[in-house]
Length: 258
Image (tube, rainbow, N blue to C red; front, side, top):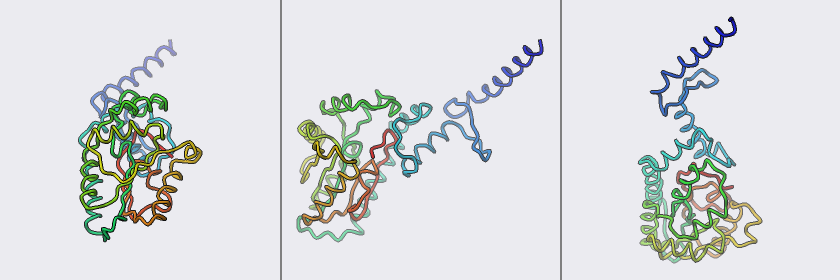
């Protein structure tokens, strides 16, 4: 009898805790930090996303299960577009105020491709926006279809840089066998006139993406190019020496590439 009463009290207490939270952010049980700060799961997931962008959270294989809905809403939201547009606008502010372009054919800018020029959100939509561990074969099959849409603000930046006579280098972690499909996809959505497209050959796959990319940049500089800036969605695209004069990062909480 005592045990039944205790169980009933526990259940009643749990329901009393749950009912008010059905109107809370994202209809999720509220939590508290170690310091007693009351947070919703929306707060938690926004904090997780922000710390991914700040590079405090690294090497994650999947988005936390409880945050996949939030991340999906973010990458489809106007906030994601505003964040991306602000990044590309800052590139132009920097270019206009801090770059003494020589206009001798050696001024250069480096772009990543995936989620920098082309969006992989359509693919990740079917993979819980990073909530599922990605099958590389499936991802490459999707890439080979050439259906990735352009990121509009990046396309605008690309064309503006080109109009100023800057040499554009695309350095991607995509593998060499995707060259034709990648080129066709880029051209189809409006990118053309880049100086070089660099993809990974089998030897490059033996080192980290970060090392592969900075080795390519090192070679560009040894060839006389001045890399004024880099735009990418992963820290592995912009870290390492030489890094260019300035590096700019687009938002991407769906996956991490080291």
